[in-house]
Length: 140
Image (cartoon, rainbow, N blue to C red; front, side, top):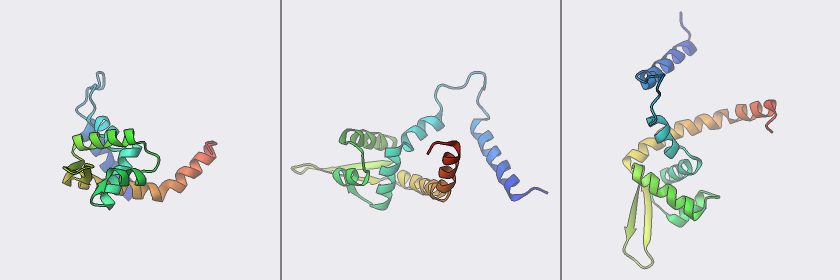
């Protein structure tokens, strides 16, 4: 009889097989959808931008900059453009002087926030283990 952990491992293995099973291992593809999408959506700045926009329905540039502590104007601007191009966020500019620009999550971005929250909850739960392992390995 299989245990819960073994069942979970089998489900995980099947999902990974479904994701990568079609790939020719001798000639892996140059374009990897998982890597390409994850590199944009999960870098440290994009994750924080998306989480803050999940918390506040609409934010302007300077408010986002305050919440995403440590990010420069240039990097924030770049990340917002990429997130908009990929469909995670929308940008609305108002014809005012000075121009007012507001950012919000798209419906697609909202579905990503749900998955991102699952991951961040897992991280919060398991961060003491990671820190303990780092200390044991001598990284702290």
